[in-house]
Length: 125
Image (cartoon, rainbow, N blue to C red):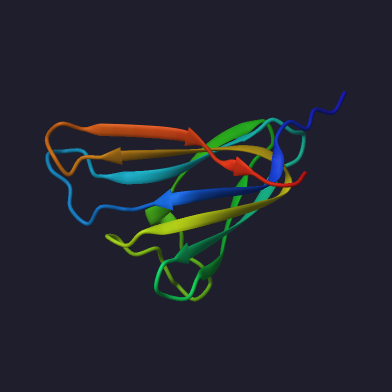
């Protein structure tokens, strides 16, 4: 029996990597991917901004029946572009097989840590 839970097109409208952190924990954001299927997923991730052109074609692989937490600071496309810290952004995640996308943010800009997580918005199939 083949299981294909999830969707192939996701959006995360609120992204922001703080430029500074306090204490031992670094502020970060992660795209949390769950691939329940029998086939590895190939992700294409595009970042959109308020006042600049998008950074497109970040790629990532998530093996079949696995989960992966992809920090947005790890993303680098073929042109070596990265998502800048301190700049609001949004993400589009396209997968060649259905996956489930959650988004998490750890804000350690103050000594009182804040952790936020939410499911992405899925569009289409």
